[in-house]
Length: 437
Image (cartoon, rainbow, N blue to C red; front, side, top):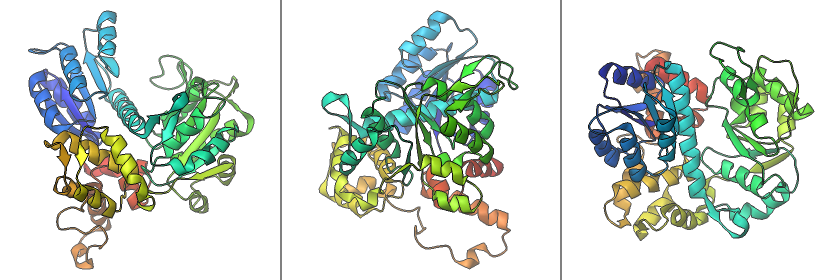
Protein backbone atom coordinates (compact mmCIF):
# COMPACT_ATOMS: atom_id res chain seq x y z
CA UNK A 1 0.00 0.00 0.00
CA UNK A 2 1.51 3.30 -1.11
CA UNK A 3 1.84 6.09 1.46
CA UNK A 4 0.58 9.51 0.36
CA UNK A 5 1.14 12.76 2.25
CA UNK A 6 -1.58 15.32 1.46
CA UNK A 7 -1.34 19.04 2.33
CA UNK A 8 -4.49 21.06 1.58
CA UNK A 9 -5.88 23.95 3.67
CA UNK A 10 -9.46 23.76 2.35
CA UNK A 11 -11.38 21.17 4.43
CA UNK A 12 -13.80 20.06 1.68
CA UNK A 13 -11.00 19.68 -0.89
CA UNK A 14 -8.77 17.90 1.63
CA UNK A 15 -11.52 15.42 2.49
CA UNK A 16 -12.51 14.72 -1.14
CA UNK A 17 -8.92 14.20 -2.33
CA UNK A 18 -8.12 12.02 0.67
CA UNK A 19 -11.24 9.93 0.09
CA UNK A 20 -10.48 9.51 -3.63
CA UNK A 21 -6.91 8.37 -2.93
CA UNK A 22 -8.03 6.01 -0.16
CA UNK A 23 -10.53 4.42 -2.55
CA UNK A 24 -7.60 3.83 -4.89
CA UNK A 25 -5.91 1.73 -2.22
CA UNK A 26 -3.45 4.31 -0.88
CA UNK A 27 -2.70 5.05 2.77
CA UNK A 28 -3.29 8.80 3.12
CA UNK A 29 -2.20 11.20 5.87
CA UNK A 30 -3.80 14.61 5.36
CA UNK A 31 -2.79 17.95 6.89
CA UNK A 32 -4.13 21.49 6.68
CA UNK A 33 -0.73 23.20 6.79
CA UNK A 34 2.88 22.64 5.79
CA UNK A 35 4.72 22.57 9.14
CA UNK A 36 2.59 19.73 10.56
CA UNK A 37 2.92 17.76 7.31
CA UNK A 38 6.71 18.16 7.27
CA UNK A 39 6.94 17.03 10.88
CA UNK A 40 5.08 13.85 9.94
CA UNK A 41 7.25 13.41 6.83
CA UNK A 42 10.33 13.26 9.08
CA UNK A 43 8.89 10.19 10.80
CA UNK A 44 6.75 8.55 8.14
CA UNK A 45 8.70 8.58 4.82
CA UNK A 46 5.89 8.94 2.24
CA UNK A 47 6.00 7.46 -1.27
CA UNK A 48 4.17 10.46 -2.77
CA UNK A 49 3.23 13.97 -1.63
CA UNK A 50 0.36 16.10 -2.95
CA UNK A 51 0.25 19.74 -1.87
CA UNK A 52 -1.87 22.78 -2.54
CA UNK A 53 0.00 25.86 -3.78
CA UNK A 54 -1.51 28.80 -1.90
CA UNK A 55 -1.45 28.12 1.84
CA UNK A 56 -0.33 29.72 5.08
CA UNK A 57 2.01 29.79 6.93
CA UNK A 58 3.97 27.89 4.25
CA UNK A 59 3.23 27.94 0.53
CA UNK A 60 3.11 24.76 -1.51
CA UNK A 61 6.45 25.65 -3.12
CA UNK A 62 8.03 25.97 0.34
CA UNK A 63 6.58 22.59 1.31
CA UNK A 64 7.90 21.11 -1.94
CA UNK A 65 11.40 22.47 -1.33
CA UNK A 66 11.51 21.12 2.24
CA UNK A 67 10.19 17.71 1.19
CA UNK A 68 12.96 17.43 -1.41
CA UNK A 69 15.51 18.11 1.34
CA UNK A 70 13.97 15.44 3.59
CA UNK A 71 13.37 12.86 0.85
CA UNK A 72 15.37 13.65 -2.31
CA UNK A 73 13.58 12.42 -5.41
CA UNK A 74 10.18 12.11 -3.68
CA UNK A 75 7.49 12.62 -6.36
CA UNK A 76 5.38 15.68 -5.46
CA UNK A 77 2.18 16.78 -7.20
CA UNK A 78 1.29 20.47 -6.82
CA UNK A 79 -2.39 21.41 -7.19
CA UNK A 80 -3.80 24.92 -7.48
CA UNK A 81 -6.64 27.04 -8.79
CA UNK A 82 -4.28 29.96 -9.41
CA UNK A 83 -1.69 28.47 -11.73
CA UNK A 84 0.61 30.56 -13.89
CA UNK A 85 3.37 29.50 -16.25
CA UNK A 86 5.94 31.10 -13.94
CA UNK A 87 4.63 29.18 -10.91
CA UNK A 88 4.55 25.90 -12.82
CA UNK A 89 8.13 26.41 -14.01
CA UNK A 90 9.27 27.19 -10.45
CA UNK A 91 7.48 24.08 -9.14
CA UNK A 92 9.22 21.91 -11.73
CA UNK A 93 12.57 23.53 -10.94
CA UNK A 94 12.12 22.60 -7.29
CA UNK A 95 11.46 18.98 -8.28
CA UNK A 96 7.67 18.71 -8.67
CA UNK A 97 6.51 15.66 -10.62
CA UNK A 98 3.43 17.42 -11.97
CA UNK A 99 1.40 20.62 -11.66
CA UNK A 100 -2.39 20.00 -11.74
CA UNK A 101 -5.02 22.70 -12.17
CA UNK A 102 -8.18 22.75 -10.02
CA UNK A 103 -10.88 21.64 -10.53
CA UNK A 104 -9.95 18.14 -11.63
CA UNK A 105 -11.67 14.75 -11.74
CA UNK A 106 -10.92 12.09 -9.13
CA UNK A 107 -9.84 9.58 -11.79
CA UNK A 108 -7.47 12.17 -13.28
CA UNK A 109 -5.73 12.58 -9.92
CA UNK A 110 -5.67 8.82 -9.32
CA UNK A 111 -4.02 8.16 -12.69
CA UNK A 112 -1.52 10.95 -12.05
CA UNK A 113 -0.78 9.57 -8.58
CA UNK A 114 -0.13 6.09 -9.99
CA UNK A 115 2.22 7.49 -12.60
CA UNK A 116 4.05 9.52 -9.94
CA UNK A 117 4.38 6.47 -7.67
CA UNK A 118 5.65 4.35 -10.55
CA UNK A 119 8.13 7.10 -11.47
CA UNK A 120 9.32 7.29 -7.87
CA UNK A 121 9.69 3.53 -7.57
CA UNK A 122 11.66 3.24 -10.78
CA UNK A 123 13.87 6.19 -9.85
CA UNK A 124 14.71 4.70 -6.44
CA UNK A 125 15.39 1.22 -7.80
CA UNK A 126 17.44 2.38 -10.74
CA UNK A 127 19.56 4.70 -8.62
CA UNK A 128 20.10 1.96 -6.08
CA UNK A 129 20.70 -0.90 -8.50
CA UNK A 130 22.90 0.86 -11.04
CA UNK A 131 26.54 1.55 -10.30
CA UNK A 132 28.60 3.57 -12.75
CA UNK A 133 31.55 1.96 -14.52
CA UNK A 134 33.71 2.93 -17.48
CA UNK A 135 31.71 4.16 -20.43
CA UNK A 136 28.84 5.23 -18.14
CA UNK A 137 27.19 1.84 -18.43
CA UNK A 138 25.22 0.23 -15.59
CA UNK A 139 26.96 -2.42 -13.55
CA UNK A 140 24.64 -5.20 -12.43
CA UNK A 141 25.09 -4.93 -8.69
CA UNK A 142 24.16 -8.32 -7.26
CA UNK A 143 23.75 -9.76 -10.77
CA UNK A 144 27.31 -9.65 -12.07
CA UNK A 145 27.27 -13.31 -13.06
CA UNK A 146 24.89 -12.36 -15.86
CA UNK A 147 27.03 -9.62 -17.41
CA UNK A 148 28.58 -11.66 -20.28
CA UNK A 149 25.27 -13.33 -21.16
CA UNK A 150 23.52 -9.95 -21.32
CA UNK A 151 26.26 -8.44 -23.49
CA UNK A 152 25.71 -11.20 -26.05
CA UNK A 153 21.95 -10.61 -25.97
CA UNK A 154 22.40 -6.83 -26.26
CA UNK A 155 24.40 -7.26 -29.47
CA UNK A 156 21.22 -8.45 -31.25
CA UNK A 157 17.88 -6.71 -31.78
CA UNK A 158 15.87 -9.75 -30.70
CA UNK A 159 12.83 -9.58 -28.43
CA UNK A 160 13.71 -10.72 -24.89
CA UNK A 161 11.47 -12.23 -22.21
CA UNK A 162 12.93 -11.71 -18.71
CA UNK A 163 11.60 -14.18 -16.14
CA UNK A 164 11.84 -13.89 -12.39
CA UNK A 165 10.04 -13.24 -9.14
CA UNK A 166 8.77 -9.79 -8.20
CA UNK A 167 11.59 -7.54 -7.05
CA UNK A 168 14.41 -9.78 -8.30
CA UNK A 169 15.92 -7.14 -10.60
CA UNK A 170 14.24 -7.84 -13.95
CA UNK A 171 14.07 -4.19 -14.95
CA UNK A 172 17.75 -3.67 -14.11
CA UNK A 173 18.54 -6.54 -16.49
CA UNK A 174 16.40 -4.86 -19.15
CA UNK A 175 18.22 -1.56 -18.71
CA UNK A 176 21.58 -3.29 -18.91
CA UNK A 177 20.58 -4.89 -22.22
CA UNK A 178 19.52 -1.48 -23.57
CA UNK A 179 22.71 0.23 -22.33
CA UNK A 180 24.93 -2.29 -24.12
CA UNK A 181 22.90 -2.31 -27.33
CA UNK A 182 23.12 -0.36 -30.59
CA UNK A 183 20.00 1.49 -29.38
CA UNK A 184 21.69 2.86 -26.25
CA UNK A 185 21.54 6.45 -27.57
CA UNK A 186 17.76 6.12 -27.98
CA UNK A 187 15.12 6.26 -25.24
CA UNK A 188 14.38 3.51 -22.74
CA UNK A 189 10.73 3.53 -21.69
CA UNK A 190 8.96 1.16 -19.31
CA UNK A 191 5.24 0.46 -18.95
CA UNK A 192 3.80 -1.36 -15.93
CA UNK A 193 1.12 -3.46 -17.62
CA UNK A 194 -0.40 -4.47 -14.27
CA UNK A 195 -1.00 -0.89 -13.12
CA UNK A 196 -3.45 0.17 -15.86
CA UNK A 197 -6.84 -1.04 -17.08
CA UNK A 198 -7.05 -2.47 -20.61
CA UNK A 199 -8.42 0.80 -22.03
CA UNK A 200 -5.80 2.99 -20.38
CA UNK A 201 -3.00 0.58 -21.28
CA UNK A 202 -4.00 0.57 -24.97
CA UNK A 203 -3.86 4.39 -25.01
CA UNK A 204 -0.58 4.35 -23.08
CA UNK A 205 1.04 1.97 -25.57
CA UNK A 206 -0.37 3.18 -28.88
CA UNK A 207 -1.51 6.75 -28.14
CA UNK A 208 -4.84 8.23 -29.13
CA UNK A 209 -6.45 10.88 -31.33
CA UNK A 210 -8.47 13.79 -30.00
CA UNK A 211 -12.04 12.66 -29.35
CA UNK A 212 -11.15 8.93 -29.44
CA UNK A 213 -12.96 8.41 -26.13
CA UNK A 214 -14.50 10.43 -23.29
CA UNK A 215 -11.84 12.69 -21.83
CA UNK A 216 -9.51 12.50 -24.85
CA UNK A 217 -9.42 16.28 -25.31
CA UNK A 218 -6.11 16.25 -27.19
CA UNK A 219 -3.96 14.04 -29.38
CA UNK A 220 -1.40 11.97 -27.47
CA UNK A 221 1.55 9.86 -28.58
CA UNK A 222 1.91 6.39 -27.08
CA UNK A 223 5.01 4.64 -25.80
CA UNK A 224 5.68 2.89 -29.12
CA UNK A 225 6.06 6.31 -30.76
CA UNK A 226 7.95 7.90 -27.87
CA UNK A 227 10.42 5.00 -27.76
CA UNK A 228 11.28 5.41 -31.46
CA UNK A 229 14.85 4.20 -32.08
CA UNK A 230 15.15 2.87 -28.53
CA UNK A 231 13.78 0.16 -26.26
CA UNK A 232 10.31 -0.39 -24.78
CA UNK A 233 9.97 -2.56 -21.67
CA UNK A 234 6.60 -4.22 -21.03
CA UNK A 235 6.75 -4.87 -17.29
CA UNK A 236 4.55 -7.78 -16.11
CA UNK A 237 3.37 -8.51 -19.64
CA UNK A 238 1.26 -11.43 -18.38
CA UNK A 239 -1.29 -8.95 -16.99
CA UNK A 240 -2.28 -7.59 -20.42
CA UNK A 241 -5.90 -8.21 -21.39
CA UNK A 242 -6.28 -10.94 -24.06
CA UNK A 243 -7.92 -8.54 -26.54
CA UNK A 244 -5.00 -6.14 -26.23
CA UNK A 245 -2.58 -9.06 -26.58
CA UNK A 246 -3.77 -9.46 -30.17
CA UNK A 247 -2.87 -5.85 -30.97
CA UNK A 248 0.53 -6.24 -29.34
CA UNK A 249 1.13 -9.40 -31.39
CA UNK A 250 0.53 -7.44 -34.59
CA UNK A 251 3.13 -4.84 -33.60
CA UNK A 252 5.70 -7.54 -32.93
CA UNK A 253 4.92 -9.34 -36.20
CA UNK A 254 4.47 -6.42 -38.58
CA UNK A 255 6.09 -3.50 -36.72
CA UNK A 256 2.90 -1.50 -37.41
CA UNK A 257 0.22 -0.03 -35.10
CA UNK A 258 -2.57 2.58 -35.05
CA UNK A 259 -3.40 5.13 -32.40
CA UNK A 260 -6.75 4.64 -30.64
CA UNK A 261 -9.35 6.42 -32.79
CA UNK A 262 -7.22 6.33 -35.96
CA UNK A 263 -6.91 4.02 -38.96
CA UNK A 264 -3.57 5.42 -40.10
CA UNK A 265 -0.81 2.79 -39.72
CA UNK A 266 2.44 3.89 -38.05
CA UNK A 267 5.80 2.17 -38.12
CA UNK A 268 7.34 0.99 -34.83
CA UNK A 269 11.15 1.09 -34.80
CA UNK A 270 11.42 -0.18 -31.24
CA UNK A 271 13.10 -3.12 -29.54
CA UNK A 272 10.65 -4.81 -27.17
CA UNK A 273 11.71 -6.38 -23.88
CA UNK A 274 9.15 -7.95 -21.53
CA UNK A 275 9.15 -9.18 -17.95
CA UNK A 276 6.89 -11.52 -16.03
CA UNK A 277 6.79 -13.23 -12.66
CA UNK A 278 4.35 -15.85 -13.92
CA UNK A 279 4.65 -19.19 -15.71
CA UNK A 280 3.35 -18.12 -19.12
CA UNK A 281 2.93 -21.70 -20.32
CA UNK A 282 0.54 -22.27 -17.42
CA UNK A 283 -1.25 -19.03 -18.30
CA UNK A 284 -1.63 -20.31 -21.87
CA UNK A 285 -3.18 -23.54 -20.57
CA UNK A 286 -5.72 -21.48 -18.60
CA UNK A 287 -6.57 -19.36 -21.64
CA UNK A 288 -5.17 -16.19 -20.12
CA UNK A 289 -2.26 -15.68 -22.50
CA UNK A 290 -1.95 -16.14 -26.26
CA UNK A 291 0.44 -18.86 -27.32
CA UNK A 292 1.43 -16.99 -30.50
CA UNK A 293 2.29 -13.89 -28.46
CA UNK A 294 4.35 -16.03 -26.08
CA UNK A 295 6.47 -17.35 -28.96
CA UNK A 296 6.97 -13.82 -30.29
CA UNK A 297 8.14 -12.59 -26.87
CA UNK A 298 10.15 -15.65 -25.90
CA UNK A 299 12.75 -15.35 -28.69
CA UNK A 300 15.50 -14.96 -26.08
CA UNK A 301 14.47 -15.97 -22.53
CA UNK A 302 16.50 -14.70 -19.55
CA UNK A 303 15.99 -16.13 -16.04
CA UNK A 304 16.76 -13.90 -13.04
CA UNK A 305 17.28 -15.99 -9.89
CA UNK A 306 15.59 -14.97 -6.62
CA UNK A 307 17.78 -13.35 -3.98
CA UNK A 308 17.52 -16.37 -1.65
CA UNK A 309 19.41 -18.40 -4.30
CA UNK A 310 22.28 -15.89 -4.55
CA UNK A 311 23.00 -14.82 -1.00
CA UNK A 312 26.64 -14.26 -1.96
CA UNK A 313 25.39 -11.03 -3.54
CA UNK A 314 24.09 -9.67 -0.22
CA UNK A 315 27.31 -7.90 0.81
CA UNK A 316 27.61 -6.02 -2.48
CA UNK A 317 23.92 -5.12 -2.51
CA UNK A 318 23.91 -3.85 1.07
CA UNK A 319 27.02 -1.74 0.50
CA UNK A 320 25.51 -0.24 -2.62
CA UNK A 321 22.10 0.48 -1.09
CA UNK A 322 23.54 2.02 2.09
CA UNK A 323 26.03 4.17 0.17
CA UNK A 324 28.02 4.89 3.33
CA UNK A 325 25.05 6.33 5.24
CA UNK A 326 25.00 3.53 7.83
CA UNK A 327 26.98 0.43 8.75
CA UNK A 328 25.59 -3.07 9.24
CA UNK A 329 26.60 -4.93 12.39
CA UNK A 330 27.65 -8.56 12.03
CA UNK A 331 24.46 -9.81 13.70
CA UNK A 332 22.38 -7.75 11.26
CA UNK A 333 24.17 -9.32 8.28
CA UNK A 334 23.60 -12.77 9.78
CA UNK A 335 19.87 -11.99 10.10
CA UNK A 336 19.74 -10.86 6.47
CA UNK A 337 21.44 -14.07 5.32
CA UNK A 338 18.96 -16.23 7.26
CA UNK A 339 15.91 -14.47 5.81
CA UNK A 340 14.11 -16.03 2.82
CA UNK A 341 13.49 -12.75 0.92
CA UNK A 342 10.00 -13.23 -0.54
CA UNK A 343 10.26 -9.68 -1.96
CA UNK A 344 13.82 -10.19 -3.26
CA UNK A 345 16.12 -7.21 -3.99
CA UNK A 346 13.26 -4.73 -3.76
CA UNK A 347 12.46 -5.91 -0.22
CA UNK A 348 16.13 -5.65 0.78
CA UNK A 349 16.27 -2.11 -0.61
CA UNK A 350 13.09 -1.11 1.27
CA UNK A 351 14.32 -2.55 4.56
CA UNK A 352 17.67 -0.80 4.34
CA UNK A 353 16.06 2.51 3.29
CA UNK A 354 13.66 2.24 6.22
CA UNK A 355 16.54 1.53 8.58
CA UNK A 356 18.47 4.55 7.30
CA UNK A 357 15.47 6.75 8.05
CA UNK A 358 14.36 5.27 11.39
CA UNK A 359 17.56 4.03 13.09
CA UNK A 360 19.25 6.90 14.94
CA UNK A 361 22.61 5.15 15.47
CA UNK A 362 25.32 4.93 12.81
CA UNK A 363 25.25 1.11 12.96
CA UNK A 364 22.19 -0.98 12.12
CA UNK A 365 21.84 -3.98 14.42
CA UNK A 366 19.77 -7.17 14.16
CA UNK A 367 17.26 -5.87 16.71
CA UNK A 368 16.63 -2.80 14.53
CA UNK A 369 15.54 -4.81 11.49
CA UNK A 370 14.03 -7.86 13.25
CA UNK A 371 10.40 -6.58 13.05
CA UNK A 372 10.69 -6.28 9.27
CA UNK A 373 12.14 -9.78 8.81
CA UNK A 374 9.40 -11.63 10.66
CA UNK A 375 5.81 -12.59 9.88
CA UNK A 376 3.07 -10.58 11.67
CA UNK A 377 2.71 -11.11 15.42
CA UNK A 378 1.06 -14.41 16.24
CA UNK A 379 1.27 -15.62 12.63
CA UNK A 380 3.54 -18.02 10.82
CA UNK A 381 4.71 -17.42 7.28
CA UNK A 382 4.67 -21.11 6.52
CA UNK A 383 1.85 -22.58 8.65
CA UNK A 384 -1.72 -22.20 7.41
CA UNK A 385 -4.48 -21.22 9.81
CA UNK A 386 -6.37 -24.16 11.32
CA UNK A 387 -9.65 -25.10 9.64
CA UNK A 388 -11.51 -24.17 12.84
CA UNK A 389 -10.49 -20.54 12.29
CA UNK A 390 -12.80 -20.43 9.23
CA UNK A 391 -15.84 -22.21 10.70
CA UNK A 392 -19.05 -20.28 10.16
CA UNK A 393 -17.51 -17.94 7.56
CA UNK A 394 -18.64 -17.50 3.96
CA UNK A 395 -16.17 -18.05 1.14
CA UNK A 396 -16.17 -14.30 0.53
CA UNK A 397 -15.24 -13.59 4.16
CA UNK A 398 -12.46 -16.21 4.04
CA UNK A 399 -11.14 -14.63 0.84
CA UNK A 400 -11.28 -11.18 2.42
CA UNK A 401 -9.34 -12.35 5.49
CA UNK A 402 -6.75 -14.14 3.36
CA UNK A 403 -6.10 -11.01 1.30
CA UNK A 404 -5.93 -8.80 4.41
CA UNK A 405 -3.46 -11.18 6.09
CA UNK A 406 -1.28 -11.39 2.97
CA UNK A 407 -1.26 -7.59 2.61
CA UNK A 408 -0.06 -7.33 6.20
CA UNK A 409 2.59 -10.01 5.67
CA UNK A 410 3.95 -8.18 2.62
CA UNK A 411 3.86 -4.72 4.16
CA UNK A 412 0.98 -3.55 1.96
CA UNK A 413 2.93 -4.25 -1.25
CA UNK A 414 0.34 -5.21 -3.87
CA UNK A 415 2.70 -6.84 -6.35
CA UNK A 416 4.15 -9.19 -3.71
CA UNK A 417 0.67 -9.88 -2.29
CA UNK A 418 -0.76 -10.72 -5.71
CA UNK A 419 2.23 -12.97 -6.48
CA UNK A 420 1.87 -14.77 -3.13
CA UNK A 421 -1.87 -15.31 -3.65
CA UNK A 422 -1.31 -16.22 -7.32
CA UNK A 423 -3.88 -13.73 -8.60
CA UNK A 424 -3.57 -10.83 -11.05
CA UNK A 425 -2.67 -7.47 -9.53
CA UNK A 426 -5.74 -5.90 -11.12
CA UNK A 427 -7.91 -8.59 -9.42
CA UNK A 428 -6.27 -7.77 -6.10
CA UNK A 429 -6.85 -4.06 -6.70
CA UNK A 430 -10.57 -4.71 -7.32
CA UNK A 431 -10.85 -6.81 -4.13
CA UNK A 432 -9.12 -4.14 -2.03
CA UNK A 433 -11.51 -1.52 -3.40
CA UNK A 434 -14.56 -3.74 -2.90
CA UNK A 435 -13.78 -4.46 0.76
CA UNK A 436 -11.97 -1.17 1.60
CA UNK A 437 -8.91 -3.08 2.82
